[in-house]
Amino acid sequence: MLLQSALLKNGLDAALIVQRVDLFYFSGTGQEAHLFVPSEGSPRLLVRKNFERAQADSPLGDIKPLLSLSDLKREIESSQTTALTSIGMELDVLPFNNYKVYSDLFPQTQFLDVSPLLRELRMIKSRMSWN
Image 1 (spheres, rainbow, N blue to C red):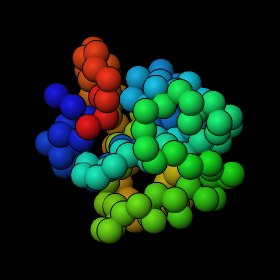
Image 2: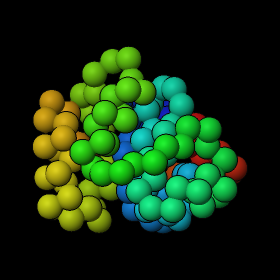
Image 3: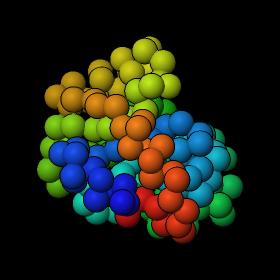
Image 4: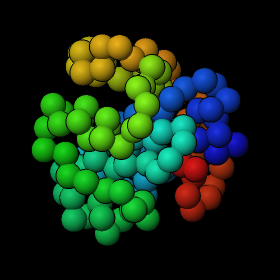
């Protein structure tokens, strides 16, 4: 099962991946970044540190620098045609203060734990695991 299919099956609009192990598996880079994977459409890798290295590492086509978390909402919403009502995140490892930042950025969005789903998908070894 691939990530976008799993998101659709679980009724999620998208996943926002921030944990390094998951980032590496789904984007191909270990740089500090946010990987936004919509249930339909192309994923967007938003890189906070070492943008050039992320570009060299990742096979993804949509890679952009992310200067601050305040830009995260704009970058995500600019890639969407519909409102996001549910986003999956790795809530088993995400510190509460970080969760609060994301929930404040997206107040109309419900955040759900996709950690078990991501762990299951990481057992699958493929080149482009996000689609």
